[in-house]
Image 1 (cartoon, one colour):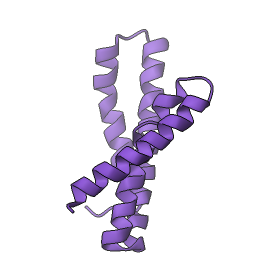
Image 2 (tube, one colour):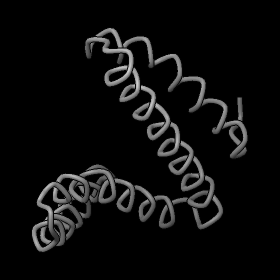
Image 3 (cartoon, rainbow, N blue to C red):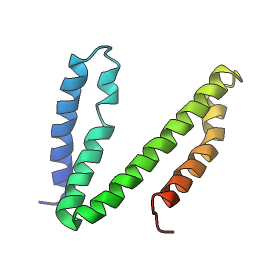
Amino acid sequence: MSEYVIRFLVGGAVVSAFSMLGDVLKPKSFAGLFGAAPSVALATLGIAIYRHGPAYASSQSLTMMAGAVALAIYSIVVCQLLMRARMRALPATLITIIVWLAAAFGLWKIAGGQA
């Protein structure tokens, strides 16, 4: 079976499990939070462990964590521009992509990324 089929099946099963968890929790907005990203990350790490070993999966998980932190930084800056500077959504998000790229590549480098 191809890697994509396995990723699809494992990801679908984990998405369903996280969706059920999100459905049980209050508020219901947690359902979206638990829906896609954790399941895709878990499926990817499972395949990485199976195909390349734990050391490779460890470096992948560090990269995923760095990306999550960069996304959090991006989200905070966008929220500040929207609320405090009263910018419109499109300019705020487009300008802040530079912040996300700087945070993502900086954290990737700190996490041991290869250039």
